[in-house]
Structure formats: C-alpha cells, structure tokens
Amino acid sequence: MRILHVLPEMSLGCGVSASVFSASEAMLSRGHKVWVISGSIDSYYLNKLQMIGVCISYAPLSQYKKSLFSYLKAVTIIYRFILKQKINLLHSHHRWNCLIGSLSAKLAGIISITSDHNVLWGQRLLSFKADGIITDSIYNKEHLKKYFHIIDGRIKVVAPLINKSRYERLVSGKQKENQDNEFNKYKKDGVCLIGQVARLSEEKGQKFLLEVIKELIQQNVRVRFLFLGDGALKADLEKQALHSGISEFVSFLGKREDITDFLTSLDIYIVSSYKEGFCLAAYEAIIAGLPVVATAVGGLPEQIKNGETGFLVECGDKDDFKEKLITLITNTEKRRQMGQLGKQHILERYSYEGISEQLENAYKYFLSRVVNRGNE
Image (cartoon, rainbow, N blue to C red; front, side, top):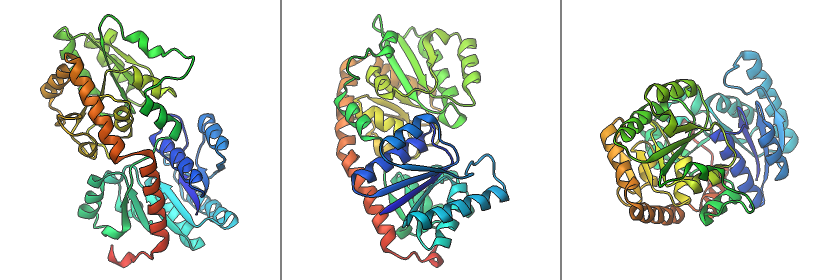
C-alpha cells in the first residue's frame, strides 16, 4: 500500500501526532510506503519522521486558520501529491482535514478514511465524508452507529499505536541506560508518587482532581502529584493549587519527551477526564505496570477491569475518587497486584503486533470494498 496521512500538525505533546508517527512506523515495518502532509511540523517530529524514512510535505491544514482560499490551496496540493506519489489510500485526522482529504482523494479517484480523534463530539457534516472510519474503541463505534447512523461496514475499531521502542521499554520497565531518572527526586521519605500525562484543558478534569488532592493533603496522606502536559488551563490550575495550599505537593512539568522515565517512576496513574475515547496515556501507564484510577468514561472501561486492574470512578464523585486513591496509596501489595494484572490484560488484548496487524487489515478492508454512501 501507498499511504498518505493528512493532519493539522506534527508536534510534541500532540496525541494525534504521536499516533500518526507510530502508525507510519508500523506500516513501514510491514512493507508499505508512507507519506505525511501536515499544516506544521516541529523539529522533534521532523527528525523522527526523517529518521524512519517518511517524506514530509506542507499544506495549509491548520484547524485554527480556516478559509476558502486555504481550503482550495490544500486540496490542490494534496491532489497533486496523490498523483505524483501514486498514493492509493489517504488517511486523514481531524474533521477539517477529513473534509479536505476526502475531496482530494475523490478527485484523484482513491479511497479515503479518517480517524476523527474527537469523533464523539464532531459534526457529521465534516467528520464522515470519508469512505471509512477508524475509531479507537467499541464505545466510539456504538456511538457512531447510534447517533450518526453510520453503517457497521464503514467502521473499523483499531486502538492507537505507540512507537515500538517506547512500547518495548514500557514492557520491560527499564529506564534508559546510563541515565538517571530525574523524576525519582520527587519520590522520597515514603511519599507515594502519582501522575498524569494529559493536555491541561477542561475536558481532562484537572480542576476536579486538584479538589481531590486538597482533601488528601488535609487528611495528611503522604503523596506527590506530577502533571506532564501543557494547555490553556495551566495558569488557572497553578493558581488553584496555590490558593488551595497544595502547590508544594503538585508540580506542573509541561511537555516532555521522557514519558517512559516518568511512568516508570510513578506508583499510581490517574485519569480524571470527562471525555475520552481510547486513552493512550492510560494504555502506556498500564503497560508500565501501574495501577490506574480513572473516570468511567469512553473507552476506559475497555482498558481497565474495575477492581481487578485498577479502579473506575463516576465523573464528579470526589469522595469515591479520593477513597480509591487512598486504598492504593496505603497498600503497596495491592498496587503491585493490580499493576501486574493490568499489564497482563492489556498486553493480551492490545499488543504492538496485534494493533499493527489490525491497522493493516483495516486499510486492506477499506481498499477492497466500494462503500455504499447511500446507506449511511
């Protein structure tokens, strides 16, 4: 196959960017050709893509700078690129890019599919013009069928990939050779280290989480919380922590590349989101052997067996979230058992090779059939 990914940006800290890089790496290893067209590419992903042999091009694809001119220019660039490189499958990401990619593919006479990473809240007009949809969880698939009336044959469920070297390091639990893990400095005097990797935004629930942390500190629970990620809420969250008197127990560390070292230093992982599909950060934490306390939203119940490999809590239930954390904070053996069971469960269901094969099969499936748009 000759695959073209179309997305708004390739930048550090962007989950879609990480997913596209990992999918590209996996398909290259399976003998396919891959290209990327993006609205912006930072040096981190520019180097990573070039190192694995993926050619990169630019088109005005930013979801924040939409105009008829940029739309037509992007379609023209992608259409010509498809013809020049003899692309036979276009994979778009984000609603706006799906619209652009689908039209470009239609003009060139090839198949287009989309992974709308916000598909649960997207607008049908833009999200579902592609020939096929790859979604990351059974929950999302059922939502598409129920609320948007997408026929079953147009949807394939494939969990996101992480890059192979990171996957292998997480499975092994090893830190980089000859390198101290700087996150261990937060873990001293018997403190339980708890962390999260997420965009700092309303739907990720960090405001709620800081309220939980405040009550834990008031009960003299020995904890330290680390947040990796950036976003519009960072200043507000830092102010909330300061006004709540918990700033010395909470650290906002921004975007980081060393996620594996971060996860291997933690005792517990937390997800406080109000909305999720397949939670890639939780997936990585579970592979690293961490027990997870998470809100019971989206695809998280598919990743976590409640009470066995972690705990699921209803959104907004501050007391239950706090009590589940205390259960793990105060019981080292329970943390170990849950972490081991979670790792075993996730590796059986979502191994790197298994997801890579599912993605390849999904591509082949959409290439092999003619979608009946009239049955939407």
